Structure formats: C-alpha cells, structure tokens
Length: 148
Image (cartoon, rainbow, N blue to C red; front, side, top):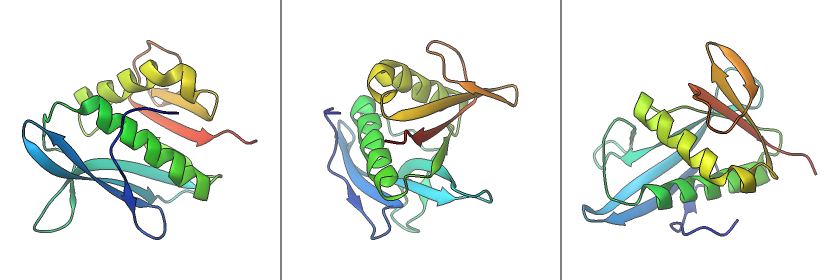
C-alpha cells in the first residue's frame, strides 16, 4: 500500500516505532508501540507523542499538527512491519478518547478496500465482536494479518 507517510524508525524487536510529525506546530516526536497483553498473541497498539522528559507515550495530548492522515498512514505502515515479524499476532486498538476511536474508524473506512485484502478486521460494540462493517460505530478494533 503506497500512502504518503512518515519515515519510521524501530527498535530491534519491531515493537516500538518512532517518527516525526511535521506541521504548523513544528516537528513533534511520535511513538507507536505494540505491547503484549495477558492473552497469547494479543498486542495493544498505542500511539502518542513522546514525552521528552520521561520517554513515555502521551496518548491524551492533542497535537493538532494538521497531518492526521499522514500519521494514520504511518501507523498502518508500522502495523505491516510488525505483522511481518509477528504473523500470528492480533492487534487491539482503541482511541484514548471517543473522538480518537472515531478517527481510527474513519481511517479504517477510508482504506478498508485496500487493507481488507491483507487483514482480518473486527469491531467491538457492547462487548460483542463482529467482522468489521464500514460505516458502523465501534468501541474498539482487532486486526490480524491474513494467512497466505
């Protein structure tokens, strides 16, 4: 998938990725992290600004750097790279706020016809999981790379 995105740098394990968001607010260091949770092959996806003092991810800050589409395309690129190394992984994603979850859904809808060829995508509503349907509101998402 060829989308305008930022250059990614990753750790050796391909579980943490960094990039610079560039826009009206300047250059802002962003971090994408895949963290194993208490279930086999289930990883939580985190995205946020890197706190320059602690190195932690701040997923509550509103950067508003005018590049949300390019940031989402960069997250998609990180997901592809992560799944190349961890093909059995399931990735859980939800926004830190309802508005951010909505942005994720908008991004999935926009690129659904492209990514559905490569990924199984499910959405959660009312604690129930179902195959993702464009245009439907979801509280969270899980995806897995389709087997070849």
